[in-house]
Image (cartoon, rainbow, N blue to C red):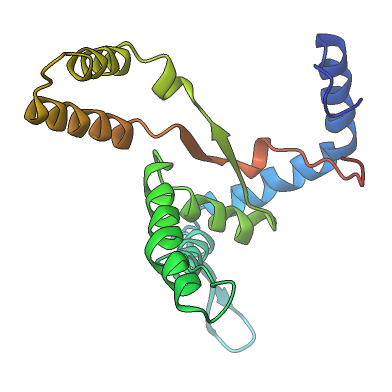
Length: 203
C-alpha cells in the first residue's frame, strides 16, 4: 500500500500473516541460537578406553553466553558523535564543533530511557541483526499539564506592564529543565527475536 495511506486492520493482519509465513523458519533458528546462548553445560567426564584417560564432555560455565556478552561489550564501547564541517572555513568549523556536535550529543543522551547500543550489538552477534527504533513523541512536551502550567506562568509574567525579570529568568530555567527531563524523541531497543524484516525496494 502507498506509504502515505493509513493502514487498515485487515491490511495489518495480512501483513503480519505474510511476515510470519516468510520468516517462520528464521524464528525457529533464532530460538535455537538463543537457547545455546543461555545454556549452562554441566561438567562431566568419561573414561577413554583407548589411552586410559579422562575425556571432558562439557563445562558448566555458559561459555557461549559469556563469549557473546564479552564481544558485545567490547564492540559497543563508548560512542562518540562527530560532525564534519562543510568546509575549512572557520565559521563552518565553529558551527559543527560548537553547535551541531553538542546538540547531537545531547539528543543521544536524552533520547535513551534504557541502554540501546548494548542489547542491539548483542543481538547482532547472536542473530546477525540488531534493531532499534527512533520515535518522535511530541506529547512529552505538548500534552504535559505541568509544561502547560509553566508556559501559562511565563506568559502571565511577560504580559505584565512591569515584568519581574528575575521571575522570568527563573521560570525560563524551569521550562528548560522540564524539556531536558522530558525529551520528545525516544530511541528504543527492539528485540531481534520479535522483529520480522521486510525485504522490499519500494518506499
